[in-house]
Image (tube, rainbow, N blue to C red; front, side, top):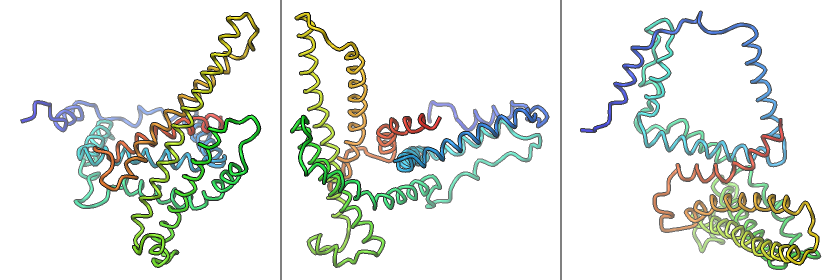
Length: 314
């Protein structure tokens, strides 16, 4: 027998001990209602502005999608999660005792897909569909890089960027073909020609994810090269100070900005890397991988961008 207290019994005791809520005790003054409506109005307008900004829709859907993955994982691991939440809400029950919501109303039938998981799948499909048009900016980026590095640019960073653009372009092309084939737009015969005679798209998706892994890995290489170059620049400035030569006053501020950006980029790359490793492995992926880990990694990777976009809507 478990040594932990029965959560159901504890919640029942709290519910019975709590006095019934009286609607007359709720502040429904015109002022408070108007303030609430204004807050909702401002939030909706800011959300609309975020969605209309460049990359805003993609960033929002990504964050929303990975949040749903986390919730779906929690729901699947804890069948009593919905029941517990319902009973906690029932503590603040209306004056009528018979209006208490049964905990069983939020429990799905056996075999049914939970609504949170179904919504997560729907949003994921929407994101994949929107990425059909992602080849155009990737082509423009790749074309610019093929023309050669800009004057004064580091040749190593340019080669890393060229490899990354090629990897992401390959990933997007293979994902597009797979999605269109699964939707009946591209014929199985065309897929078979690309896939060693196999008309199924599983292998194409696998190679698409491997190309994505290559692109994410390039971020790690880029960050390593940037750190190397920055250390050299800082060593030169330190020597200049030691020699009594003048150094730009704003340089410390620029160093702080570089450090913030570098560590942020490292955090993002570190969040995407295990996900890319998992999906690019044909033998089962990362041990212990689940929707919860995927949701956390996706949230960490996209949080910085969403925060910046949301702050710009204020």
